[in-house]
Structure formats: structure tokens, C-alpha cells
Amino acid sequence: MDDIQFKIIVADPTHKPYAKIITDEMEESAKARGTGIAKRTPEYIETKMEEGKAVIALTQDGTWAGFCYIEAWGHGKYVANSGLIVSPPFRKYGLAKQIKKEIFQLSRKKYPESKIFGLTTGAAVMKINSRLGYIPVSYSDLTDDEAFWKGCQSCVNYEILMAKKRENCICTAMLFDPQGDKHHVEEIALRDDFKTSVKLFDRWVRLKKFVLLKMKMPKTGGLKLF
Image 1 (tube, one colour):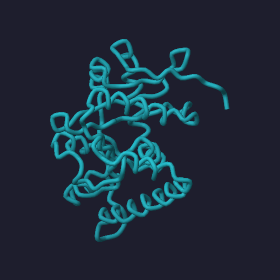
Image 2: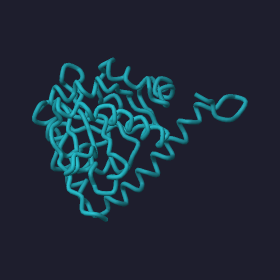
Image 3: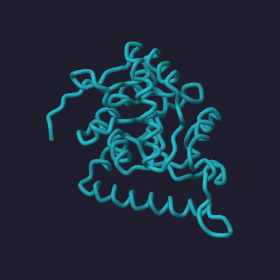
């Protein structure tokens, strides 16, 4: 593996030229995974850069490598680290973990009293989140801000979310509570058998997806097409 050095910094207006590249890769990545995301426009990403609520990863020659941004909900009571994306050529360097750490620290700096949450379908993201102090929670523990849930409309699994009355979906909810028992969470995340736990989580996600997707089965058989 080549030794590539990344510069991970708080994004600012000078990084606006990368906005279209970032949103295009977000969309392509979601299609490849067969999952959905709250679709964002380049203009939205540019706003996050202007507000200093995003981090961007670049190689030493200025090539875009990764990105993530902050969204605040419920008047700042809840914060989400959203849109984590790594450019395909740089996905074997542990960059996602580095970006998550930086955006988490930025979130704690800007919103020290806020709960930080995320929705994920990936075991790797769960592992990263767990090491930062997140724990799996029910959907009822997340923000009830309608603007947040409206963003799920562009997800291919939105029908499942609404059918379950926003109480469950294919994504797993995780939450960091600054008032929670952080040390206990870290102890769990660093256990020697954590890798095994992640594998079990990955199997559980696949089972959950299979069960919930059965809701899309029409009476005549076969999957509905959306």
C-alpha cells in the first residue's frame, strides 16, 4: 500500500469547488450500497463550508479524498455528523476513521452540550462510532425535529420508515450523550472481542434488512420496483 499523507481540516469557502464532486460521489456511493441518504445539493455543501461546519480531507497535491459535515436539529439539542464520504481511491487507508474523529471533535467544540447521533447500516461505521462513545439506541431517542425526518424522503427505504411509524428502519441509530456514562461505553468498545461483536452486528443488519424488505413484497410475489 502506498504511503499517502492526508490533510484533514475544517472546510471553508476556498473549498467550494469540491462541492459538486462531493455530492456526486455521495449519490453514487448510496446507489452502489443499495441504500439511501438524505440527498444534498452542492449549494447546501457550500453553505456548510461557509459556516465552518464541515471537515475535508485532501492529499498533499490537493486531490479531494473525503468529507463530512455537521447538522444541528431541535434548536441545537441534537447534532448529526452527516454525509461521511471517502473518494474510492482512498478507501483502504483508514481515512473514514480519521474524518469521523475530526468531525466529532468539531461537533463537540461547536455544540458541547448537544447529543450527537447517527444512522448507519454499516458495521465499520458502528465500530468507529463506538470508539468515539456512541451507543445503539432506539429511534425514539433521536431528535423529533420534522426537518430531519423529512430528509429521509430521498432514501429508497423511506416507505419502510413510515410504515414503521418512524420507530424502526434498516438503519441502526447510535447516540453519543455528553452526560452519559462515557467511560463504560469506551470500555465496551475496546474489548478484545469487539471485532467479533461487529461481525455479529453485520449479520444482524443483513437479517434486519431481509425482514423489513419483506414489507415491500406485493401479494403477487416479487419485489416492488421503485
